[in-house]
Image (cartoon, rainbow, N blue to C red; front, side, top):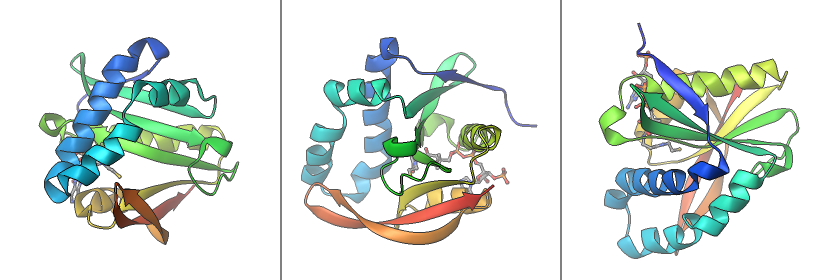
Length: 173
Ligand SMILES: CC(C)(COP(=O)(O)OP(=O)(O)OC[C@H]1O[C@@H](n2cnc3c(N)ncnc32)[C@H](O)[C@@H]1OP(=O)(O)O)[C@@H](O)C(=O)NCCC(=O)NCCS
């Protein structure tokens, strides 16, 4: 029986909490696997207030917190239409980010967030959900495969000066 998780839409009033959580979870997940200068260079552009303000105000993007026992355990970012980082297919939903804090991983919180995204896409009669994931992020790839996602392509991703490969995965609905 999965533990109960509350999923709450993030608003502009939550910007500092979202920014701190996004930065922390990104560094926790990837700092030990990458060059520190590349991490900082990416973060200096990605995790800044102005960028988050734009993302939160974009009508095609939605962020949601996962709350476990009242505490923020993670978040997900969904993109529709032209807010998608690629494809920009109106029939698709992109999961651009899904991150659970280390101490909350393995409690089926990520699963509940991804189920929420899939249910949202189904209720909007979309055809598929897709995402990009670093080829070396084997844990996340297993997690997505477990949910039925399959690889359909790949694309380059710049982490600072390091050109990496993201695998693109999709789940047909
Ligand atoms: C990937 C991530 C979102 C998964 O969330 P989570 O809450 O830890 O995962 P859950 O506990 O919900 O696991 C859900 C299912 O996936 C499976 N799963 C999770 N991690 C797995 C792994 N490493 N290998 C195989 N299966 C895995 C679980 O067994 C579970 O399956 P079940 O429902 O059959 O029991 C989370 O670990 C995370 O935030 N990682 C760091 C950031 C990251 O890599 N984000 C993705 C960037 S693209």
